[in-house]
Image (cartoon, rainbow, N blue to C red; front, side, top):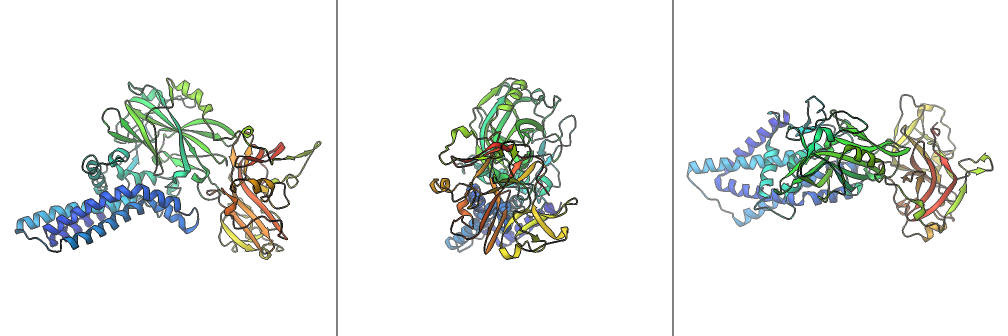
Length: 606
């Protein structure tokens, strides 16, 4: 309601301003607004991509990630309008006068159009930004219809909603079919553009990530369940072996989709798609995933949101299961700590519509309209689910030129983690102790059942003397280690100079670049380092960034060197509980293999 009142007042004020200035000035300004809008829509997507790519993954800079889409659209419009206005004023310094009726009526019409378009851009820009859990403009809601239809994303048709954003997007979409038509027209790739911000910001608790970088996911393939051209009963096609009950699907227009097929888009998420903090999960809802499909023969496109997702159910098992978006605010989270996560989004599409693009948290990936796989029945699809690519690695295809074999048993006696350079432990290594209040750039958390505080994120450099030799008796004042969710275990790998896994070893000296070493479990899942503890004589470096894994150790603030008097370095990994670590790899080389494999059990937290 507040934004409706704001929109109405802003439009009236802008209309009055241009009525005072006269018809000719109002007309010229309207042309400037139209041209500035065209420029803003043209540069919005590449500019947003650029800002997201450059946005820091942690700290104050994350504000840029949360606001990149809105800044790209709003600033492009504002800068273009200012430049055009200055140029027009220079080229046409004089005004034209008409009779009073023409002056007031013409200026009023042009002023009203200017007000609607300007406020429309303001609302669209604000809806694409996030400064908190609120939603300035709520263009999308969840249907309240029963009978198995809950959870569908539909348009907000409340008469109290401001519609200037919808009118603005609709006008430029219509113009992109004619005078503003390009190779990438707005009407084709962004049907109902004004809904995008509301879709992106429908996040878990209003605080989980609302924007993605292009590198955070890729489309592996897509399948068609049913006949694309003739269609079938959607209610039947939405069944599966996990929940063999009816599910009705309501489209954005509020109408049930009854005849069509199911398009399943297989997406592989990278570790960078995870949330920041100790939990570090990929958390996503159906509103944040948007499929654009084109109707055969007409070129007309529509947007759709998924009704179900196929994802990994357990961190220690790569088998996938299907989950439905059948309730308001339903969000699916990844499990375990593997670097890759596969999710398959199922969309109910009317017959003859074929996917051309998918948007996940605002980032577009194009899709070939021809499906990679076709299933005639839900049973065929369900049988194929376990075979979907899970982002694993085949160790037999990697090089072993500098590989070391590390025994974890001596006869029948199990060796300690220190002896085979791998410890399942979430406490700080060595004799390091940090007092609460002295953590500076580290973010910490203490749960109701925790004895100590735990690090959930951040990076900091300490003087080594500050951390060693002190004893903190009170548990509630001690930062003991790293936070780990219930399905993940913290694994610490000793990569210091005296370790057989040392970062200055022969493998890294001969490697192309400086790829960070990843752990590999018995199912082929990879785990990137998400932090480190490096202790030198003068400084101690501590970092824990689960949402921003380490890709290259060449960018670290320290180097492993045999010339340093003291240097202990541990890489921190989030590993799925219940798996077995079999190897460490770097690029196309195997660094080490543990024999037998290291069991990542439920133990490891103090």
